[in-house]
Image 1 (cartoon, rainbow, N blue to C red):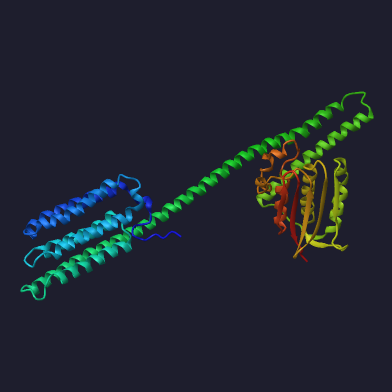
Image 2 (image 1 turned 90 degrees about the vertical axis):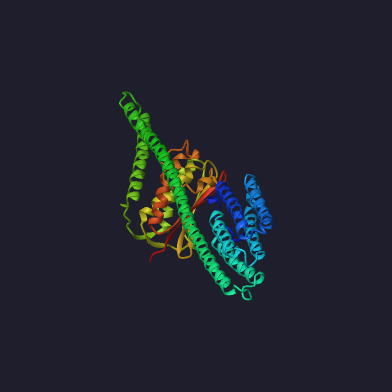
Length: 444
């Protein structure tokens, strides 16, 4: 588990190497510039003080050059925190070696104030680290003053205690400003990060919506092209063979053959038109339900007799399971919608099965009836199973090429199942077959 100490603000995207370098240059100027005060504050010791300053300044300069080295940013947080602490201790040492007659009491606490403000803002310290730097600065300053300087026994004790209290007032004020500033900065940063994340999420949603709209537009275009083909094909059959019927000297056999083709083409076109009307009603919310007593056994038996011959013509074995333990099952539902659902599923099974068998029926599933239509056809790939019930997706499937039909059958079936209070799903393995299931509530 990765443990991260809250020394700096966590939003790395706000970190700027140029800002860090400006802060380091500012630190060099401040720490070095205050060295000129040594001549006035402690003239007898300014040489010793410059040794301390030189060590700290060397580290700051070293940090500046390190900032151009990319691996530095992996450990910069701890390094900079140590650098600030060293700068703090450097000033405390200067105070410790001063004498009562020196001006250190009046000047060097200003250096501590600058360290607090400089570190909190330039290095983007977190609220907790700003508080740590501020409080530790005040504590260490007072410990240094009390342990290394004899305020109480000094002839000027009361005066120097007043100076110490004044210094603490300014240090506390600077500390409070740095802590409040760090808190406000962190608060604003969290707000900015929240807005940034919200904008990113909105962008992702807009991109997904755009992709979905483009996909829908593409599929609608494919659907219209398919509809154009599906309508023209039977229409051409009707017009073409109607023209052939005008020819004289046609035998009765030829006439009946042509009439049969016309009837078949008309039925195909009527089915397409019905599908279009049904899906339009579903999408517009105008599809009405008519509930009545429905004998499920008889309805499945009728469907078996209706599709048996068509399945036989393709060399398929059609099996129907019409009852549960020999009992008649009667439910309150929309009979025509149930018929349409099962018709679409069985027609699909026959269409996409070239050899083998088709099995359909129903059984009890909790308080619902669970219907199934199983085939040994071409199957559906896993990536297409989620989209198989969606509008317009079927016509885009490479497996549907060469098969006639509007491609709306499964969409209509799903819409009807949901209108009746059930759910529908598919289980399939490509090349081995497909099983469709749907449930309907058993209303009394």
